[in-house]
Length: 140
Image (cartoon, rainbow, N blue to C red; front, side):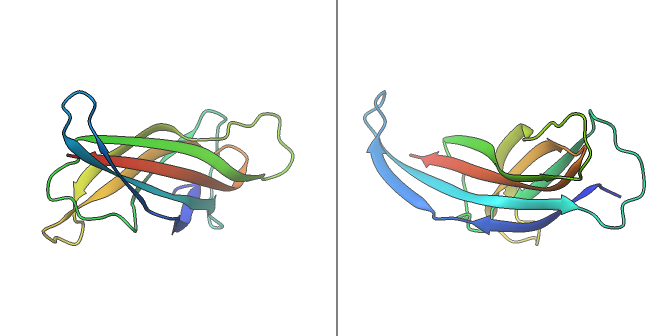
């Protein structure tokens, strides 16, 4: 059983930008997705947690456009929005690491492909943590 559980994925505004690739002079479109993830300690967790323990999360962006072809460029930025510790602690590691964004097949077996965000986060002394995300997909 995992220490933290995903409680919510809250999408923010989705933005579109049109521009020109400076190296090829071809038009490009950038789509920026933003929002946050709410992670909280699982009430039924039984076990020990070490300071260096990390837990992996993988979520499909709820407002992702379908991508029949992968975008020409993808980037992801993660930051901590809110953190609440379990109390009497000596050290805290907060944030996300090993983040990646990819275009993945529809988990329901559909024909479209969607953006999936994967990252790991420390869990020691965590009661609740919210992680902001900003994903940029650029297509020619």
